Image (cartoon, rainbow, N blue to C red):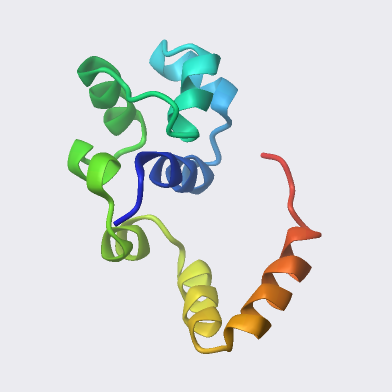
Length: 108
């Protein structure tokens, strides 16, 4: 089971929406979007409904997103393939790969 912050980040990435844009589109402050993303606060019911509408998912997926939900509803085919490949390497190799990929991290 994933937490709301992880699911929110994945959905923002899928829709190519920054925290600032999500704030403007939802009326939720940029600070609160960040805190929700870090699981420091929980959104109100109204905020949750707005987020689910803007991000085109159910409130259920936002609150209890499972790996199955994430993989089938959010990730692109390329991202699914990468996950499958990573799952089949050793933990040590996985750390090396993630370290390598982190050098290419780009702000959206």
